[in-house]
Each structure stands twice: as structure tokens, then as C-alpha cells.
Amino acid sequence: MVSQKGDETMRRTLVIFKPDAVNRSLIGRILTRFEEKGLKIVGMKMERLNVYKLKQHYEHLTNKPFFEELLDYMSSIPCILAVIEGKDAVAVVRRLAGETCGRDASPGTIRGDFSMSTQTNLIHASENDEVAKYEIDRFFKPEEMFSYDKMNFNWIYCRSEKGMYTEIKDKGKSVEEIEHAKKKMMEMEQKKEQ
Ligand code: UDP
Ligand code: MG
Image (cartoon, rainbow, N blue to C red; front, side, top):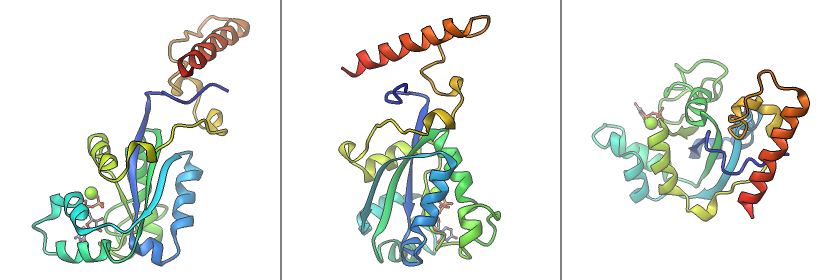
């Protein structure tokens, strides 16, 4: 199997399973949504978020009337924090989460299926790639995240989506030539790892 390590076409996003997800025993069902979609969990832990971190995390909402209530809710019990990886992972996870208010969120989305609230809406998901980077840095140390080969990878993405094959120009090549090129790629990957 080709190594998935160092594939720069993959993106990472931060997901927080909020206190209502923990309290309502929905951690497993929500996690399953990400796993079944084909996303990869590369970091995961439980943490009771302190007000200092939450004030940074929700800085854009400081002046909102619900800010204090939001801080109380988010710090009430521990959350589950996860770093999730995949192609366009930030946008994909936002779509899986659905609209902020659970009542407005489309059926089929996590919030649309399980939430009735504009605050207790089960998960946080980073808004865009730039925000994802600094949110991951805020909550995860580098040693708490992992790069590893996942067995279903080859069935989740087609060859040209996998990054490591993008240099191979398959058009007009025989199966043998393509296989040879793949083998060379794998050897190069292995050398990189050593
Ligand atoms: N929130 C709230 N009242 C509101 C809007 C938002 O309590 O009227 C909470 C809610 O938990 C939401 C979080 O603040 O998820 C962050 O708000 P944002 O607008 O960033 O929404 P999100 O990105 O989570 O969809
Ligand atoms: Mg947001």
C-alpha cells in the first residue's frame, strides 16, 4: 500500500463534541458520521475547556448577548476534541455539521438530525482552512496528532485524488507502465520515511 504520510493534498480540521453531545450520549453516533464519510481521525482527547481558552476560541462573539451563557455551557462538563483529516476536510465537516441553529439545519446533517437549539448544537467545526490551523494549534500539541496509514484509504479516494500519484501521466500508458511508475513512487515514499 502506498504511504499516506506527507500527502499535502489532505486538510485537517478541529471538531469539538460539545457538552450536550457528551451528556446526550451522542459521541459515538456523531463520530460514526465522520468515519463512515471516509474522514480520518488523527487526534482525539477529552478536556474540560477553561474559560480562558473559550474566550479566545469564541472571540468573534464577545459582544453577543449570549456570550456568557455560551461560556457557561461550553465549560460545564468535559468535551471531546478531535482533529479530522481528509480532502477538503474543513468544508466537508462544516457541511456534515449543518447550519448553526439545529432547528434550521437540514435533515441528514448532524445538527439537523440531533439538535433543536441555536446554542446546544452538538459540535464545533472550524470555519475555513486558516481558522482550522490556529484552532488546532490552540487545542492540540504536535505530539497529540498522528500520521498513519489507514487500510480503507485506497477505496475512499480515486488515484488522482491521492496526491502521491498526481505526477503520473497515465494517458496512453500500458497497465505495466503504470504499475512500474506506482512501484517507483512507493520506493521513493519509503526512502523519504527512512
Ligand atoms: N451560538 C449561540 N447563540 C447564537 C449563535 C451562536 O449560543 O445565536 C453559539 C452556538 O453554540 C454556536 C457558537 O455560538 O455553535 C458559535 O457561533 P458561530 O456563529 O461561530 O456558529 P458555528 O460556526 O458554530 O455554526
Ligand atoms: Mg463558527
